[in-house]
Image (cartoon, rainbow, N blue to C red; front, side, top):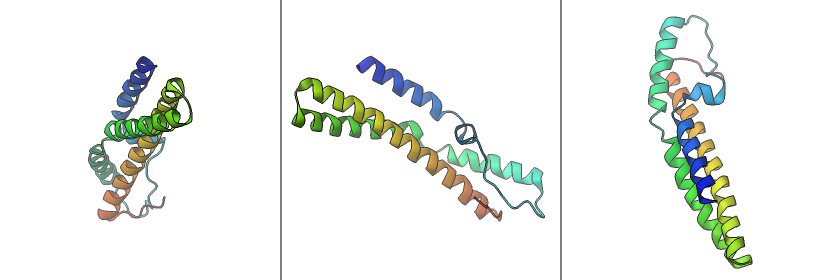
Length: 124
């Protein structure tokens, strides 16, 4: 169980190094009327660099730990040590997913705010 958990977290850490547009499958949609697209792509790249400062792997790890603790406690209360282990595992996976989702969402917000701050009309 522990080996699968750490393998899962290693995979999550590798994903956190992936660019945000690779994870979400899209870039922000802007109103491109009267926009210099070459300058937009430079600005977008800079905004994406800022977004990379959001530590997705750290958020996932913290959420996984919290989920494991909560799941383990509930499992122990409702059963025995096996139930506690299963509860911890389920809590860790759920917490990791939640942390990843929050991290990706935060990166998307950083990119959009950055582009808005540079004068682009972000439509999504």
